[in-house]
Length: 140
Image (cartoon, rainbow, N blue to C red; front, side, top):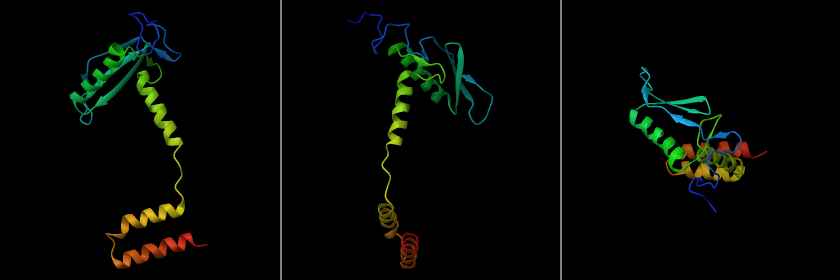
C-alpha cells in the first residue's frame, strides 16, 4: 500500500538507492561569455556540482525542465557521480547492454551488403575492381 509521500518507483521520499540522492538543486541558466556554447546550466546533487553548456538558451531551458520534471513530478533520485536522474542512468545502462549483445556480421554477409549498396551507382570498371578486390581479400 502506498502513501501520498511515496514516489512512483515505490520508495518513500528520502530513501534513495546507494549512490543516488534526492538532494538536488537546480540553478538558473546563465551566460558563459563564450561564443561556441554561450549558455550554462548548473545543478547540484548531494553537494556535488554538475553542469552542461548549450548553444541556445532554449536548449538549456529545455534540459533544465527535464531535470526539474524528473526531480519534482516523477520523484526520481539523481546519481551523485554523474548528476543524471535514475531514468537516464537506467536508459544508458540498457543501451550499453544492447550494444554488447550485438550479433557479429559474417564476412560473406558483409561483402554481399557492401556490393549490393555500391553496385547500382558504380561504373563497369568500378564494379570489376570492387569484385576483384573482395575476391583477392576473401580467397586464401
